[in-house]
Amino acid sequence: MAVPKIVLFYAFTPLPDPEAIRLWQHTLASSLGLTGRILISEHGINGTVGGDIAAVKKYVRGLRGYAAFKSIDVKWSDGTGNDFPRLSVKVRPEIVTFGVPGEVKVDDHGVIGGGTPLSPRAVHELVSERGDEVVFFDGRNRFEAEIGRFRDAVVPDVETTRDFVAELDSGRYDHLKSRPVVTYCTGGVRCEVLSALMRNRGFEEVYQLDGGIVRYGETFGDDGLWEGSLYVFDGRMNVEFSPAATVLGRCTECGTPTSRYRNHPDLDGRDLTLVCEGCVPDPVGS
Image (cartoon, rainbow, N blue to C red; front, side, top):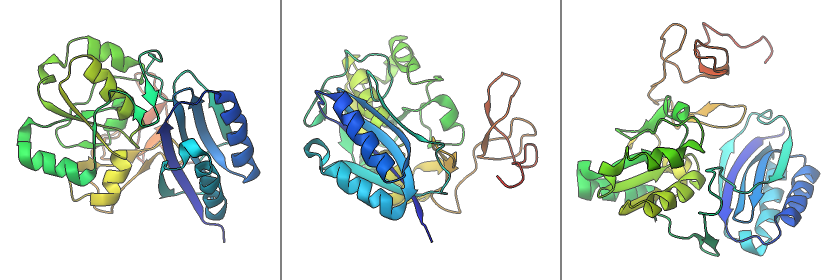
């Protein structure tokens, strides 16, 4: 029986010929029957792909066979077998679209001028030493934080990653510039860039959660500082780290606690909406 798996990965490293990397990646992934989304730029690679575990293992071996990606951090999770509609491999100006490709600089060690990486355990040590002085800063879109976030985190009012630069430049967070700020996101890629943008704007002590929420959840589950469910950009929509996960979201129709996102128009005209099974049941056989 096929065992579906999903891998999440990224690497910031100079790629002088992104188009050549795109062709190689498309050939590698498609030959193994994988689906998902891979973005490539002169700054590096960012991808999520899924398929049968044997095929995914072969893909990871092939990915790491390229010298620039030999040490790439790959995060594994269980799939459903129907997590992505197709394979998409594209070249973009940025592997995370903040809209400032000229401001992001990378070398063989990653993003230049970014925050200090902290492992999940090192984050706990920082909080133990500095207490309430530590600020968790969410590097994701606002709707993702509706179902899960770090306790007492600052959640910027952004609908897309492109909104972060204007949000930082607004002065709304200037009072945090002298405090220890821990940026976090799903797998780590967005806060790699965000932490550099924050440092460029005068934030003095910036950290980034190494490996993102995924790695934190693998380490502490729901027994740490994380609360709720993790939104993911595939057919699963959200994942929990344990059966004890707190439910933070509320159904937009009836107010019932839920972490369930579905495509459903709400009063604001959005399609992706928090709705419970009772209000918007899944189609039979889905």
